Image (cartoon, rainbow, N blue to C red):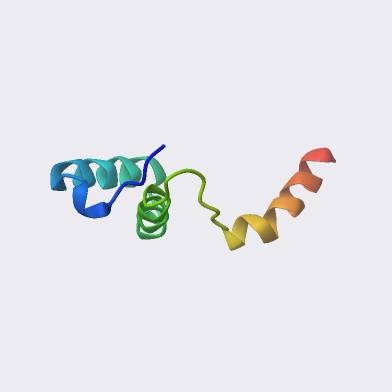
Length: 66
């Protein structure tokens, strides 16, 4: 997979992607738009960390097991 330069992405494509992200997530659009833009800059896998998911994930997992 090759590197995607943000300058190479057509403005209408970026607007469409941001619109789809906003439609899907509802709240927290800015966070996810920034995170997806960050991930698209990588040639392959790019590590991201959602702090809320890291903290609350084990609590949610334990509650599901009850």
